[in-house]
Length: 372
Ligand SMILES: *Cc1c(COP(=O)(O)O)cnc(C)c1O
Image (cartoon, rainbow, N blue to C red; front, side, top):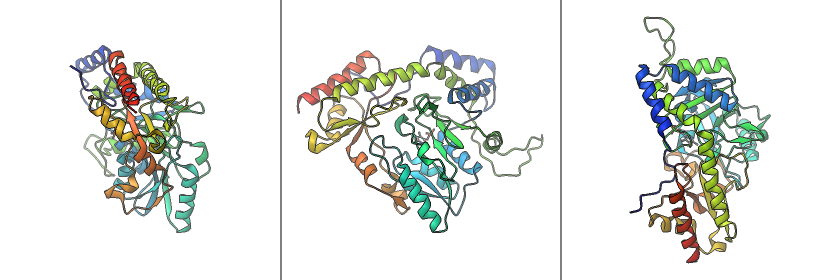
């Protein structure tokens, strides 16, 4: 019997089991401990930044990053419309207003020229732009160089991009602050968790403080600020450390899948892979884009074919400007994100897919193409 093939299932091994058991036996079953300290410094080193703060989710990291930059009510924050809702939600938590900017067709990342135009429009109206939050979509870094000189703090949403790079710089090192996610579907998982990265020691200390209920360092629980319970558990940090020893191997497996898809679709008219040819992508998810007119079939047709064979795929994120919850927000649009939503399909991309499962996916796609 076939087991279901998931889009991006967690990939755990005996290494994770060993690290977890050691953490439990150490007695540090708390949001503090040696594995958390070590995980923070290991991730900081990997991403080429000075400071890392382990938190309970990528969303928490984004929220803290924005708070630490002073983002709040009355301000606008520029967010790509093509992202997961957490990017925009974190802005709303601060009381600021998320405004949305469309994508580049090549890799789906935010269009930097449109960001510049949106910032100029907002300023002309007397609005303060508190931050821009580019997203490294599906594990490909956005174009940060093109945002140099914007004069607005950049928060890098690197939730999907650990291990990726652009122009020789690692994901997580762009902008004033960056956020990573270790959610269950991400390239490295702690089942749930995240990390805030920054080169600014004072900003890191501020975030660490806010993440631990803003408790002052005295015995009687003194508080000057409203804080959050956002720290990462030491036990989960141990899981993260184990995963980190396997990160390069996991990225290599995801790349191998992408290579396979590239070969399958190379000669298929009207198809391309999103961000094709980006040497720095971590290949978290591989996205097929189908021009139905030229191909004679749609992304949804292939998705349905694979679903009938117990193989999970998923459409590209529905853009934020089209979400009921954000429909009334401002947006600078070109139609690219809407088109990617209509024509894109995320294919099984997990590093845990072994040879037989990989063959099943490739065979199912070949059969589909053979019927066309
Ligand atoms: C997963 C994700 C987040 C949120 O991370 P969590 O750890 O699930 O809170 C934020 N932004 C993007 C782009 C993501 O993919």
